[in-house]
Length: 402
Image (cartoon, helix red, strand yellow):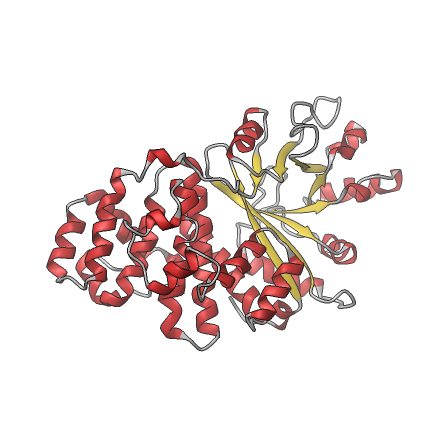
């Protein structure tokens, strides 16, 4: 991500937009000025967003909403609206901004200019049908009337695509989709599967590969085991060759990958392969979130002048959601999944050297701006470094999903 002073002037949070099949269908990006009296350049901010989240830029009301923008500053939100962002950016409007007859003409004008407006809260249900059509979608909180999505946002024929935020459990997630939501903002906090399901048999080969890599076993043994599972070997090469990771040359086979990565970095890529291979719809969404964590922590190590910790912090971030993906507590996972001692300490408690980094990532994923500021300050991480790492990770995972 190109460095810009603007990254040090804002606070950022994000959440995936998850579809009914577990696929990630976009992103909600929350942002606000880091200082209440700061006046940000909206054109510079929009330019940053367009670079980070490129699209075909073709106007059209039917274009997918790639990014929902939750701008926690009324003046900045108004400034962004006036710039007429590409239609793939959905601008979230709080309930108080959707009321008032004087706004009707402005909403229709923005709709005609292909600006994507997203209403928040059921207050939009009182709008006339003609005005309702100025909005692309609706966001409601899970706590509203037990998800409240069994009723349309208006009495007329048009229904808005509905996104649910505030979902905390897998059962709430399932209820949201069974009731008609097109997407859920964020992921539940409970495990993806019951613990009794155990570790999937298809992950066993990866566990064995990680143990061989940890013991620095001869390459021939590692290669033979990788090639014993052609599907796994194909996935590994696909990950290595993804534009998300910026390799300048194509890696044709595992032997070349081993030479390129070396035995030291191989463990990082096997950790990536592990989380990417966990089966299940919910686990699929969590794996993307885990990869973002790994990329952010790796970038923070680099920004702090600690390149020797990059791989270790990447592993920590990538494996930090593995308990939720498998339903098994970390202290039980340690027997199957080899990892550096400092990563173990960080995942298995609050005293490990990277535990606070994981707390920071959780705050970013919840857009808890006060906590982001507090934890980042305690780790001596500047907002510019954190936001640069976050934006780069978000862009990289989008390329990985493409």
